[in-house]
Image (cartoon, rainbow, N blue to C red; front, side, top):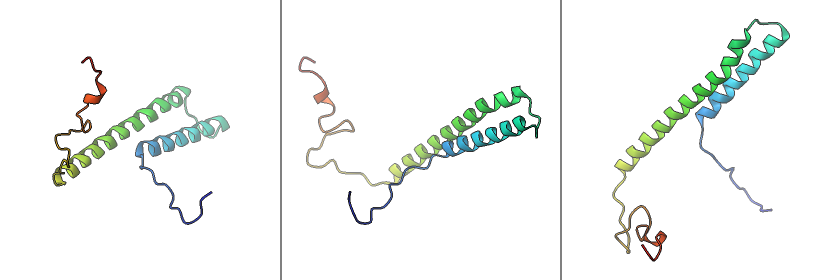
Length: 106
């Protein structure tokens, strides 16, 4: 076990998970009201809430994905050109341009 002050590990915020969690809690609350007799919610409506919650979470995930992608593109456009270093000529596949993955017979 290591000592010292180790900062907690951070993770990316996922709004779709938050939306899905809140929607599932709401569905559980509606179901609880129905079971206890305090609310009248038809069973088909209750059954349709789960797919609706999943679709809502998927829509939020798509919007967040598009926003993050647009932000990354804007950030890349603002960044200065990066030099290729001493090797030069490499591309995004690696120093050898992906040639090492191919067999000797290719």
